[in-house]
Amino acid sequence: MLDFDDKNMRIIKTFLLAFGLLLTACCSAPQTLSLGLSASTIDTTRSTTSDTVVNSPSENSVIASSDTVKSASTTSPSAAENLDATRNSLVSEQFHQLVQWQDKCYQKPSACRVDEFTIVGTKYHQALDEQMSLYAKNNINSRLGHGKREVAIESITFDDATLVAQVNACIYDTVILYMDGFIFNNHITSSHTQWKLQWDNPRWKWIDFQILHREYNTNICQAQQ
Image (cartoon, rainbow, N blue to C red; front, top):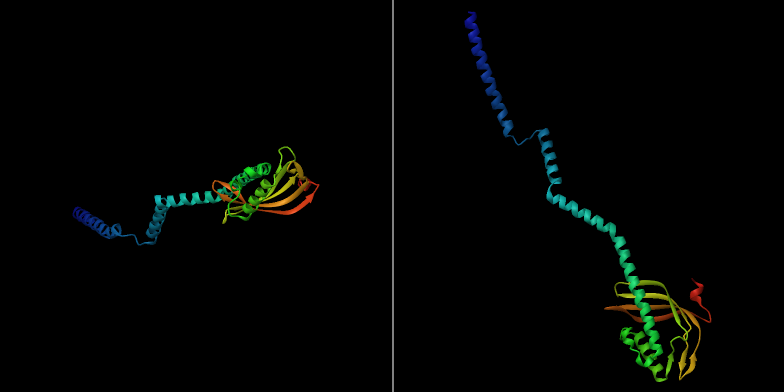
């Protein structure tokens, strides 16, 4: 009996074990083929998807572009300051060249070419052209070394829409004008003035001039320094 029972028990145990394994395999198979609808599986999928998106090349490109834009916006103020400084320097340099140009015109009005440093058609060009013609006709001129004109720039502003620069300058003028060899004007003056220059490629040229305040026999330019 015991041997039979033991044998039967072994057979039953073997059968139950085989049946249990088959049942386990059958129950676990759908889970293996599942798309993962459990809460834990969904969370893992989202987490994995999120990680994939963050690390994707396209996202990295967007991040890189964003960093570039931020970097550009950070440096743009200094870039703008450099641009303004360069433009101010150019206007200042060419403004003083125009002053020297005009001084030479007063020394020899008959050889003056006003259109070289003023824009043709502007009121300033017309007024200066008429003055040089009048001086040439009446033999009025200045002489090198007989007085001087000192110009100190006070401020420079720009109108980007019209490409016009406004230069405020203080002028101390001791230049002597002669007419037929005799003194025509030897007034000592100092003035706060306003000049307008317009970009006429490849340089700035005068289009307007105004005297804002003038005093005689004193140097208000030196007084304000």
